[in-house]
Length: 306
Image 1: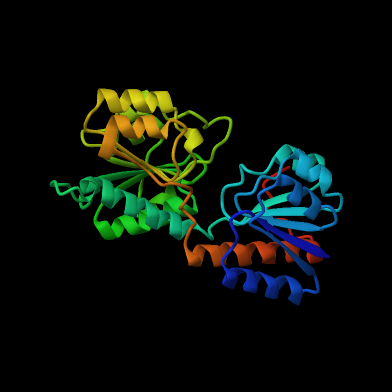
Image 2 (image 1 turned 60 degrees about the vertical axis):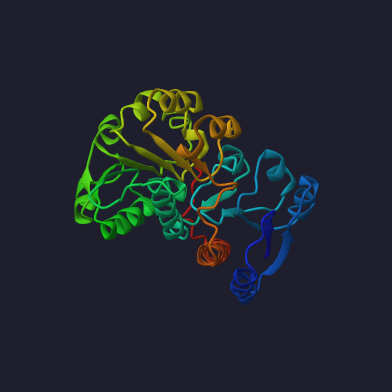
Protein backbone atom coordinates (compact mmCIF):
# COMPACT_ATOMS: atom_id res chain seq x y z
CA UNK A 1 0.00 0.00 0.00
CA UNK A 2 1.31 3.43 -0.95
CA UNK A 3 -0.14 6.65 0.49
CA UNK A 4 0.63 10.11 -0.88
CA UNK A 5 0.20 13.27 1.18
CA UNK A 6 0.08 16.08 -1.39
CA UNK A 7 -0.15 19.58 0.07
CA UNK A 8 0.67 22.93 -1.49
CA UNK A 9 0.21 24.28 2.06
CA UNK A 10 1.85 21.55 4.17
CA UNK A 11 0.56 20.08 7.37
CA UNK A 12 2.47 21.04 10.51
CA UNK A 13 5.47 18.80 11.14
CA UNK A 14 3.84 17.33 14.24
CA UNK A 15 0.77 16.42 12.16
CA UNK A 16 2.93 14.70 9.53
CA UNK A 17 4.68 12.76 12.29
CA UNK A 18 1.33 11.55 13.60
CA UNK A 19 0.13 10.63 10.10
CA UNK A 20 3.37 8.78 9.42
CA UNK A 21 2.92 6.79 12.62
CA UNK A 22 -0.59 5.73 11.55
CA UNK A 23 0.32 4.93 7.94
CA UNK A 24 3.67 3.23 8.42
CA UNK A 25 2.40 1.51 11.54
CA UNK A 26 -0.10 -0.26 9.29
CA UNK A 27 2.69 -1.42 6.99
CA UNK A 28 2.01 1.13 4.24
CA UNK A 29 4.52 3.36 2.47
CA UNK A 30 4.21 7.13 2.96
CA UNK A 31 5.20 9.60 0.23
CA UNK A 32 5.24 13.37 0.82
CA UNK A 33 4.72 16.04 -1.83
CA UNK A 34 4.82 19.42 -0.11
CA UNK A 35 4.87 23.04 -1.35
CA UNK A 36 4.59 21.99 -4.97
CA UNK A 37 3.88 24.78 -7.43
CA UNK A 38 3.32 22.84 -10.66
CA UNK A 39 0.38 20.51 -11.24
CA UNK A 40 2.74 18.27 -13.22
CA UNK A 41 4.44 17.39 -9.93
CA UNK A 42 1.13 16.17 -8.53
CA UNK A 43 0.31 14.23 -11.70
CA UNK A 44 3.65 12.44 -11.50
CA UNK A 45 3.37 11.73 -7.78
CA UNK A 46 -0.09 10.12 -7.96
CA UNK A 47 0.84 7.70 -10.73
CA UNK A 48 1.34 4.63 -8.54
CA UNK A 49 -0.30 5.42 -5.18
CA UNK A 50 -3.26 3.62 -3.61
CA UNK A 51 -4.40 6.56 -1.49
CA UNK A 52 -4.16 10.35 -1.55
CA UNK A 53 -4.51 12.82 1.33
CA UNK A 54 -4.95 16.51 0.50
CA UNK A 55 -5.88 19.82 2.11
CA UNK A 56 -7.07 22.53 -0.30
CA UNK A 57 -5.39 20.87 -3.28
CA UNK A 58 -7.57 20.24 -6.33
CA UNK A 59 -8.30 16.68 -7.42
CA UNK A 60 -9.94 16.86 -10.83
CA UNK A 61 -10.43 14.42 -13.69
CA UNK A 62 -6.87 14.97 -14.93
CA UNK A 63 -5.42 14.00 -11.55
CA UNK A 64 -7.70 10.95 -11.34
CA UNK A 65 -6.74 9.90 -14.87
CA UNK A 66 -3.08 9.99 -13.84
CA UNK A 67 -3.70 8.03 -10.61
CA UNK A 68 -4.01 4.56 -12.12
CA UNK A 69 -4.00 2.68 -8.79
CA UNK A 70 -5.91 5.20 -6.69
CA UNK A 71 -8.67 3.81 -4.49
CA UNK A 72 -9.32 6.63 -2.04
CA UNK A 73 -8.77 10.38 -1.70
CA UNK A 74 -9.34 12.09 1.65
CA UNK A 75 -9.69 15.82 2.07
CA UNK A 76 -8.39 16.71 5.54
CA UNK A 77 -11.22 19.06 6.46
CA UNK A 78 -14.97 19.35 6.20
CA UNK A 79 -15.40 20.97 2.77
CA UNK A 80 -14.72 18.88 -0.31
CA UNK A 81 -15.58 21.12 -3.25
CA UNK A 82 -11.93 20.86 -4.38
CA UNK A 83 -12.58 17.22 -5.36
CA UNK A 84 -14.42 16.42 -8.58
CA UNK A 85 -16.89 13.96 -7.08
CA UNK A 86 -18.37 12.82 -10.38
CA UNK A 87 -14.89 12.07 -11.74
CA UNK A 88 -14.00 10.21 -8.53
CA UNK A 89 -17.11 8.05 -8.92
CA UNK A 90 -16.30 7.41 -12.58
CA UNK A 91 -12.83 6.22 -11.55
CA UNK A 92 -14.25 4.07 -8.72
CA UNK A 93 -12.42 6.17 -6.13
CA UNK A 94 -13.85 6.79 -2.68
CA UNK A 95 -13.79 10.53 -1.92
CA UNK A 96 -13.91 11.30 1.80
CA UNK A 97 -13.69 14.25 4.15
CA UNK A 98 -12.92 14.46 7.88
CA UNK A 99 -16.04 16.07 9.38
CA UNK A 100 -15.76 17.71 12.78
CA UNK A 101 -11.98 17.86 13.00
CA UNK A 102 -11.79 21.59 12.18
CA UNK A 103 -15.13 22.58 13.64
CA UNK A 104 -13.97 24.25 16.85
CA UNK A 105 -11.28 26.21 15.01
CA UNK A 106 -13.84 27.59 12.55
CA UNK A 107 -16.32 28.35 15.33
CA UNK A 108 -13.71 30.30 17.28
CA UNK A 109 -12.91 32.31 14.15
CA UNK A 110 -16.60 33.25 13.89
CA UNK A 111 -16.38 34.96 17.26
CA UNK A 112 -13.00 36.50 16.52
CA UNK A 113 -14.63 38.16 13.52
CA UNK A 114 -17.82 38.99 15.43
CA UNK A 115 -16.06 40.79 18.29
CA UNK A 116 -13.77 42.67 15.91
CA UNK A 117 -16.66 43.88 13.75
CA UNK A 118 -18.85 44.80 16.73
CA UNK A 119 -15.95 46.87 18.09
CA UNK A 120 -15.60 48.70 14.76
CA UNK A 121 -12.28 47.07 13.89
CA UNK A 122 -10.84 48.55 17.11
CA UNK A 123 -10.69 51.95 15.42
CA UNK A 124 -11.19 53.90 18.64
CA UNK A 125 -14.93 54.51 18.26
CA UNK A 126 -17.68 53.14 20.48
CA UNK A 127 -18.90 49.69 19.41
CA UNK A 128 -21.41 47.17 20.69
CA UNK A 129 -21.48 43.93 22.68
CA UNK A 130 -22.63 40.45 21.72
CA UNK A 131 -24.43 39.81 25.01
CA UNK A 132 -28.23 39.63 24.56
CA UNK A 133 -27.92 39.89 20.76
CA UNK A 134 -29.74 37.43 18.49
CA UNK A 135 -27.61 34.95 16.55
CA UNK A 136 -28.87 32.95 13.57
CA UNK A 137 -26.85 29.91 12.47
CA UNK A 138 -27.32 28.83 8.86
CA UNK A 139 -26.67 25.05 8.96
CA UNK A 140 -26.40 23.17 12.24
CA UNK A 141 -23.64 20.70 11.49
CA UNK A 142 -20.45 20.27 13.51
CA UNK A 143 -19.32 23.88 13.05
CA UNK A 144 -22.78 25.30 13.69
CA UNK A 145 -23.08 23.32 16.92
CA UNK A 146 -19.74 24.63 18.15
CA UNK A 147 -20.83 28.16 17.25
CA UNK A 148 -23.95 27.65 19.38
CA UNK A 149 -21.88 26.30 22.28
CA UNK A 150 -19.62 29.37 22.26
CA UNK A 151 -22.54 31.77 21.75
CA UNK A 152 -24.15 30.55 24.96
CA UNK A 153 -21.06 31.76 26.82
CA UNK A 154 -21.55 35.22 25.30
CA UNK A 155 -25.15 35.26 26.52
CA UNK A 156 -26.67 35.38 23.04
CA UNK A 157 -30.15 34.26 21.98
CA UNK A 158 -29.59 31.55 19.37
CA UNK A 159 -31.68 30.16 16.52
CA UNK A 160 -30.71 27.93 13.60
CA UNK A 161 -31.90 26.76 10.21
CA UNK A 162 -31.06 23.28 8.93
CA UNK A 163 -33.60 21.17 7.03
CA UNK A 164 -31.43 18.09 7.59
CA UNK A 165 -31.26 18.45 11.38
CA UNK A 166 -34.20 17.47 13.62
CA UNK A 167 -35.68 20.27 15.71
CA UNK A 168 -35.11 18.17 18.83
CA UNK A 169 -31.33 18.22 18.30
CA UNK A 170 -31.34 22.03 18.16
CA UNK A 171 -33.64 22.35 21.14
CA UNK A 172 -31.45 20.05 23.21
CA UNK A 173 -28.56 22.43 22.48
CA UNK A 174 -30.59 25.44 23.63
CA UNK A 175 -31.22 26.61 20.08
CA UNK A 176 -34.56 27.67 18.60
CA UNK A 177 -35.27 26.01 15.22
CA UNK A 178 -36.46 28.20 12.36
CA UNK A 179 -37.82 26.79 9.13
CA UNK A 180 -37.16 29.39 6.46
CA UNK A 181 -34.03 31.25 5.43
CA UNK A 182 -36.07 34.46 5.23
CA UNK A 183 -37.01 34.13 8.91
CA UNK A 184 -33.41 33.42 9.90
CA UNK A 185 -32.10 36.62 8.34
CA UNK A 186 -35.03 38.84 9.28
CA UNK A 187 -34.98 37.92 12.98
CA UNK A 188 -31.26 37.84 13.80
CA UNK A 189 -28.85 40.71 14.31
CA UNK A 190 -25.90 38.38 13.68
CA UNK A 191 -26.07 35.60 11.08
CA UNK A 192 -23.29 33.02 10.74
CA UNK A 193 -23.15 31.02 7.48
CA UNK A 194 -22.08 27.35 7.48
CA UNK A 195 -23.66 25.92 4.33
CA UNK A 196 -21.55 24.08 1.72
CA UNK A 197 -21.03 25.38 -1.81
CA UNK A 198 -23.33 23.27 -3.98
CA UNK A 199 -25.24 23.99 -7.19
CA UNK A 200 -28.24 24.83 -4.99
CA UNK A 201 -26.41 27.18 -2.61
CA UNK A 202 -24.00 29.06 -4.87
CA UNK A 203 -25.06 32.71 -5.02
CA UNK A 204 -28.07 31.97 -2.81
CA UNK A 205 -27.36 34.71 -0.26
CA UNK A 206 -28.01 38.04 -1.92
CA UNK A 207 -29.69 41.40 -1.62
CA UNK A 208 -33.12 40.34 -0.36
CA UNK A 209 -31.79 38.27 2.53
CA UNK A 210 -28.97 40.59 3.57
CA UNK A 211 -31.07 43.76 3.34
CA UNK A 212 -33.78 42.14 5.49
CA UNK A 213 -31.50 41.87 8.54
CA UNK A 214 -32.29 44.02 11.61
CA UNK A 215 -30.70 47.42 12.12
CA UNK A 216 -26.98 47.05 12.83
CA UNK A 217 -26.91 43.57 11.34
CA UNK A 218 -23.67 41.62 10.96
CA UNK A 219 -23.27 38.80 8.43
CA UNK A 220 -20.34 36.40 8.98
CA UNK A 221 -19.29 33.90 6.32
CA UNK A 222 -16.74 31.25 7.31
CA UNK A 223 -18.16 28.79 4.77
CA UNK A 224 -17.42 29.43 1.09
CA UNK A 225 -17.32 32.72 -0.82
CA UNK A 226 -19.33 31.12 -3.63
CA UNK A 227 -22.54 31.06 -1.56
CA UNK A 228 -22.64 34.88 -1.62
CA UNK A 229 -24.16 36.82 -4.53
CA UNK A 230 -21.52 39.58 -4.60
CA UNK A 231 -23.65 42.02 -6.56
CA UNK A 232 -26.48 41.52 -4.08
CA UNK A 233 -24.06 41.98 -1.16
CA UNK A 234 -22.80 45.27 -2.61
CA UNK A 235 -26.35 46.50 -3.21
CA UNK A 236 -27.37 45.64 0.35
CA UNK A 237 -24.34 47.37 1.89
CA UNK A 238 -25.08 50.42 -0.28
CA UNK A 239 -28.75 50.49 0.71
CA UNK A 240 -28.10 49.81 4.40
CA UNK A 241 -25.14 51.81 5.83
CA UNK A 242 -25.73 50.10 9.19
CA UNK A 243 -24.88 46.60 7.90
CA UNK A 244 -21.49 44.88 8.18
CA UNK A 245 -19.97 41.82 6.52
CA UNK A 246 -16.96 39.69 7.54
CA UNK A 247 -15.73 36.66 5.63
CA UNK A 248 -13.07 33.98 5.90
CA UNK A 249 -11.56 34.48 2.44
CA UNK A 250 -11.86 37.46 0.15
CA UNK A 251 -14.61 37.66 -2.48
CA UNK A 252 -13.72 38.14 -6.14
CA UNK A 253 -14.34 41.90 -5.92
CA UNK A 254 -12.63 42.28 -2.55
CA UNK A 255 -10.58 45.39 -3.38
CA UNK A 256 -13.59 47.23 -4.78
CA UNK A 257 -15.77 46.25 -1.81
CA UNK A 258 -13.12 47.21 0.76
CA UNK A 259 -12.49 50.60 -0.87
CA UNK A 260 -16.21 51.26 -1.02
CA UNK A 261 -17.25 50.22 2.48
CA UNK A 262 -14.11 50.53 4.60
CA UNK A 263 -14.37 49.21 8.17
CA UNK A 264 -17.85 47.84 7.51
CA UNK A 265 -16.25 44.84 5.78
CA UNK A 266 -13.37 42.53 6.59
CA UNK A 267 -11.84 39.60 4.68
CA UNK A 268 -9.09 37.23 5.75
CA UNK A 269 -6.25 37.16 3.19
CA UNK A 270 -6.70 33.40 2.69
CA UNK A 271 -8.89 30.67 4.11
CA UNK A 272 -8.10 30.74 7.83
CA UNK A 273 -10.91 28.75 9.50
CA UNK A 274 -8.88 25.56 9.95
CA UNK A 275 -5.53 27.31 10.39
CA UNK A 276 -4.77 26.27 13.95
CA UNK A 277 -2.20 23.75 15.06
CA UNK A 278 -4.88 21.69 16.77
CA UNK A 279 -7.16 21.52 13.73
CA UNK A 280 -4.17 20.77 11.49
CA UNK A 281 -3.18 17.80 13.62
CA UNK A 282 -6.72 16.52 14.17
CA UNK A 283 -7.70 16.60 10.49
CA UNK A 284 -4.42 15.12 9.27
CA UNK A 285 -4.42 12.18 11.65
CA UNK A 286 -8.12 11.54 11.03
CA UNK A 287 -7.42 11.44 7.28
CA UNK A 288 -4.58 8.96 7.79
CA UNK A 289 -6.78 6.71 9.92
CA UNK A 290 -9.57 6.79 7.35
CA UNK A 291 -7.17 5.85 4.57
CA UNK A 292 -5.83 2.87 6.50
CA UNK A 293 -9.31 1.75 7.57
CA UNK A 294 -10.49 1.85 3.95
CA UNK A 295 -7.46 0.04 2.54
CA UNK A 296 -7.42 -2.67 5.21
CA UNK A 297 -11.09 -3.24 6.03
CA UNK A 298 -13.05 -1.38 3.34
CA UNK A 299 -14.58 1.02 5.89
CA UNK A 300 -16.21 3.78 3.84
CA UNK A 301 -18.53 5.68 6.20
CA UNK A 302 -17.07 9.11 5.44
CA UNK A 303 -17.52 8.75 1.67
CA UNK A 304 -19.07 11.84 0.06
CA UNK A 305 -19.40 10.64 -3.56
CA UNK A 306 -21.72 7.99 -4.96
